[in-house]
Length: 252
Image (cartoon, rainbow, N blue to C red):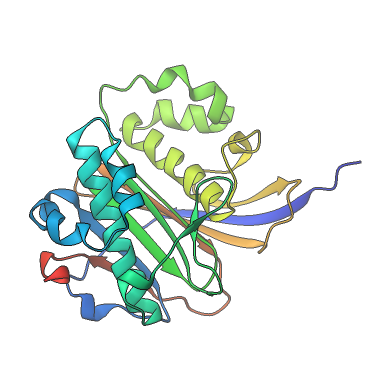
């Protein structure tokens, strides 16, 4: 008999988040979330490229679209800079390793981080415990009806279709599930449809041994056409979440 492990998952939306625009507001003891507009950093690509290894630059150059090449360089370089600030190392000293689901991590470090991108956005989250983040640009031309039955339960589908803004509801639910599997270092598998995405407290059973039993999934609408979801361990103490809109001056 397969043993199932039950996890408690609490999901809700945070409206009207205040994004600080100062890197000085980074708190090593908090859960830090960074919001990056790719277009803000296009002019810094030559400078950022010097932070990356030749192998990392080669991987970025393999993207067909210029936007994807720029996004790859900006995201990798800024991630190295932020990690360096949090663990007191130079960006050039930062090396990433990747698990079987391509989630980056550091060797011999208690720092957990996760990164996501969509459209003009890159988002990065850091914490001392497992963390997952996902951002999606709301595409009003995407026919999401084709995949509803493969990733959502009947009650989730009903909630999406009956919502005032079905597109927003779809992307909110999708990012919640995606951020949670990233926090668990899982891929999109048979458990994906079982991950609860409705508001409220739910219980999720998995045959994989979880590192923690209590989780929070928080959704954050941003800029009118994006939604971010953040999955983190539900700490019994008051957890400070620090939201930072990364300014261009960050790398100058």
